[in-house]
View (cartoon, rainbow, N blue to C red):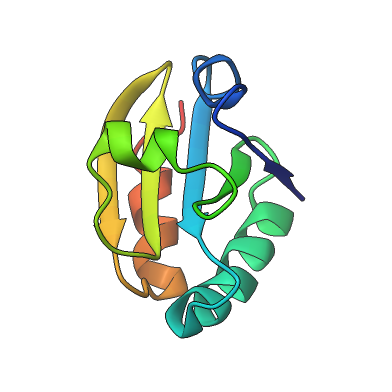
Length: 103
């Protein structure tokens, strides 16, 4: 499962552990393709926290992070950005990137 984050909860909820954050919008076609990939990985990788941020409802966080296109996926480890993908990212590529940071 994944957690919906807001501008108010983003920093706190992504400050510890390994977190994968999907920045998306309901009107975005590639985002709708990415969503099932995130859902599958969240079921397979129980030790990783998965989260989504709707950029229309929460514009401040994407702006602060310089996110100019969606979907954008950030991987954070203990609050530090360790990887970033923009555009649709295939499941195996994303999974391999996440596994690099699992202790």
